[in-house]
Image (cartoon, rainbow, N blue to C red):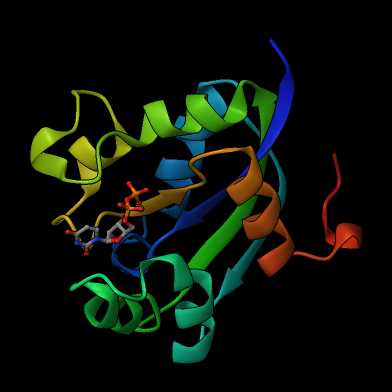
Length: 140
Ligand code: UDP
């Protein structure tokens, strides 16, 4: 298995409930290393840029409103099979469908306010890491 990097974000519903440590611990316990991390209150424009792939979806406005409504923690995670591993620990987008023991099952409030984001493939991981981090901020 390859050592990969992925992009992760702790969303405003989770930072509001002081869950940054609890969520990060779940990621670390699963063998992922946090090699970059910072707290960001993104602008509406930054949210629209980050989620541009969803711009024609009915939930786009609501999503960008939510993501710019409070602080997030953006992170780069590294580890074996990190992209798929992170998606596994996150659980399904809709918490009602998320498996037991996943972050979203434990903490997500709804399909929109679902506590975490994680890249869904190698290309998006590279793009999303570059969207939020300079190379010098990533310390592997
Ligand atoms: N989302 C939403 N309503 C939906 C589907 C998605 O508000 O019906 C939001 C939700 O916050 C989700 C994000 O849009 O995490 C991106 O959607 P995607 O399908 O990429 O899910 P993810 O990769 O985050 O599981």
